[in-house]
Amino acid sequence: MADGDRMADMAGAARANCFEPEIETATREDIRRMQLEKLRKQVAWACGRVPWYRERFRELGVAPEDIRALGDVRRLPFTDKQVLRDTYPFGLAAMPLDEVVRLHASSGTTGKPIVIGYTRRDLDTWSDCVARLAAMAGVRRGDRVQMAFGYGMFTGGFGLHQGCEKLGCMMVPAGSGNTERHLMMIEDYRTTVLISTPSYALHMCEAGESLGFDWKSASLRVGLFGGEPCTPGMKREIESRMHIVCTDNYGLTEVNGPGVGGECLASRDMNHIAEDHFLWEIIDPASGEPLPEGSEGELVLTQLDKEAFPMLRYRTHDLTRITTEPCACGRTHARMAKVRARTDDMLIVRGTNVFPSQVEDALAGIQGVAPHYRIVLDNETGMDRITIMVELKPEAFSDSFEQMDRLRHHVIDRLRQKLLITPAVRLLEPGRIERSFGKSKRVEDKRDKS
Ligand code: DLL
Image (cartoon, rainbow, N blue to C red):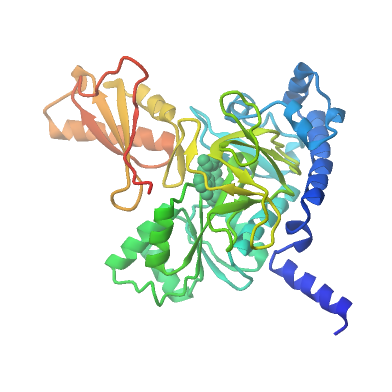
């Protein structure tokens, strides 16, 4: 075969595996040049089409033409969940809604969720990002991928599904829950890749072991885990019990969902960011000022090619640090450290985001319930468990077991509607929740994070 043909052949094979060397191993200068070109277009797009951005730009006295270098991104306004609440549901749309072919949503701090829309091209870009992270983790065409995220408003299910399908995998859209059925599918369909939160993977380990499932001879090879922090301890545990390579991937609804970054097999403690689609900044969460490369701070992301709901300078509230040092895998895209903490009070319970204010909201409407509660989190059983301790008003407290149990179930129902997960609830006598005089301590997180 002639050299030219071989090169074309290799490029074709690489593309089939969703590895794009010309992008993923581009020089830092080329990456920055590509980012600047896309940033300028994206800023003009957002400002030209979304009144909210236009107004903020006007207030800050900045125009799209002022973006001459990547550093000029700092002249743009920040966005956050609050902006999405204020413009709920479609105020940030930059395309007519009949061009929007999909919506996803995630928890807002209170009340309404935040909503994000995608055009067909946005879905395509999103799939490319996911296909890339799956390929980085060693997933290949022909792999059989078992999905344990739910298919719903949460971006995990559809996002990872369409990306792995694009890679050419056989998708098994099992969805969340029903662990025994999952185990059966691994055995019967000989699936090779599992997608879930790391805590659900641990739960599967345990459930499998108790049923005598033989993980060592099972077909699974790779875990694509994300949506919540995976501690080094969890990772070791899953790898040794499930006999798979456990990889992490990161993302958030506001900037598509999964696909912002993922782990390569050379740098197991960091995630490569898809820098052709996202411009990152690390800022001091208190001052909003940029921090030097390598320092820990809040991750801020700007999408570089989003049509429907463009997010500029989105404050993720996730704490991390980023390096552009070369990686042993040969990829040149920056790497972010695993996210272990947030700057706000958002809790992640089995992959679902929970804000204490949502609990407060749910309890506020229930007769007989006092405005005193505590959220207790633990993972003694391997899975995250959330218990809400709820104090009752004197008139609601009763000696009747049936009456108390009815009220407890009512409280569980109300919380479930708001939180989208089912918490355990303990009803307490009046006065049992300790009062505090300073900032009240609503959350007791007893989860083992080692
Ligand atoms: O969790 C998107 C996602 C789904 C990513 C599936 C990966 C896999 P949200 O529900 O909007 O979106 O939650 C986003 O979850 O800001 C982080 O705090 C946290 N998070 C997501 N992935 C990771 C991870 C999805 N790998 C919020 N490590 C983010 C640590 C993560 N935290």
